[in-house]
Image 1 (spheres, rainbow, N blue to C red):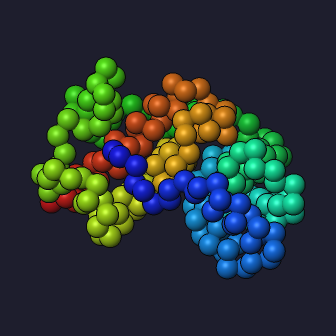
Image 2: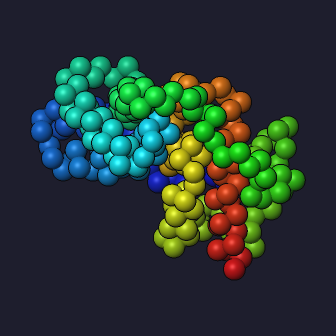
Length: 216
């Protein structure tokens, strides 16, 4: 599954302008930032606390932390990475209070059955490892064009939203928000191997939904 392209990485100049607008109290800029990252932040928070309601509280606390800390943001990391670090710290603190301190990767669903047969993906030695060997019929020669179709994108996002929180978190970070593998591993405290497994399982489930939609 290729990157969904919902949120591309911002050039440094654009990010600096955004930070300046946020520091200046631009409410529209802040609302857009919240809308862009809220879903991923909620998914991350749900892996540390016991309920969605508590996760929503954690996300709100994180945004307050963002507003309070904007003047101290030095740009050593991307803005989205900095925001996520604040969220994870808040979620971990709440998780400790709830006595929920299990490792992130251990929260993944226990079923190991892939949603799509592994042999349908290119192997690790392939230049395009992890990609489908053949795309669903209606994708034709240009799958990225099909993904731009609003209805198809909606199917993908619904499939992501239906995933267990752990899988949803990883695929949102990688394929929606555009985080790198290293950024995900650092933020969630998982090994590179665990991150790859979780991402593959999430992508497999979403691919299955896309294939049913496009070939249906």
